[in-house]
Length: 290
Image (cartoon, rainbow, N blue to C red; front, side, top):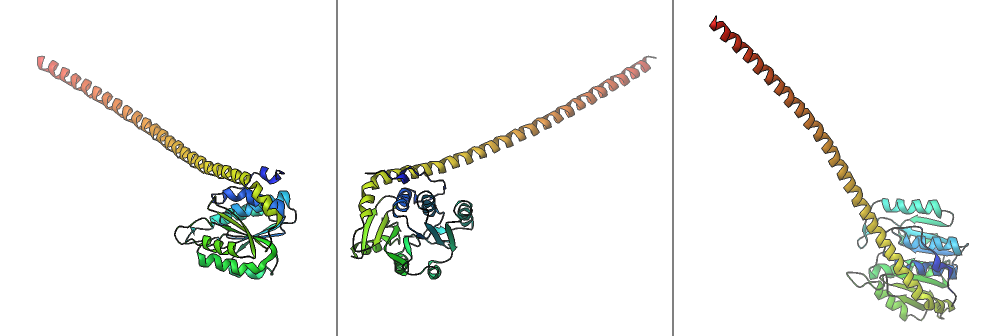
């Protein structure tokens, strides 16, 4: 089996994400399928989006990638401010602006920008309720070419109101799709719009263990980077606290010095008063003797 070059690709972009374990799969898909048009529905911090972009810059000159998101969050992922969008925009503009586009809009509104049968690879990762993900799937399916591929994140999550798993079961039973699934990293489902299994499915299945291993390593590195960041932040706080204490100590030393000076002044005045008193007493005693 030929070792893919993408297995050696190390991500340059970093952000917190539950998608790290699937980054090597994204790299492999771009290297081997060389899709002309990739669309991502739901990007958040952009780990999957930049995985596609970085792989395209290395292995696929004709790939153009779109990320569609409101960058406001939802009830499952939580809501957030513009800091997330600004971080993604900065990275995209600095390194990938010529071969990618960020569309800040709803998935439904963005449909008009894409003709039917025009998308080679689509990653669906928006709101994960059954109703929402099925709506996204049915709305965007006509946009995907025959032989194109759809990716679904979080099919292996069954808590709260997550319903990707339910849609994924339906897709696997549909004769119009050929599917591959990996359960790690909350689960990634890969469905090709074809009644016949493409040859690359076998190649991907053969290399999946190596891709999964690399994915675990990337996630571990990302987790450690978070811990290192927290440790550095704690160190900065401790250093600042120590500096504050040192500043307070210096101020206290100055105050103590002032108090000492005041004490010495008082002692000196008291000595002078005593000396003056003794002088007057001596004069008074001398006067009585005369």
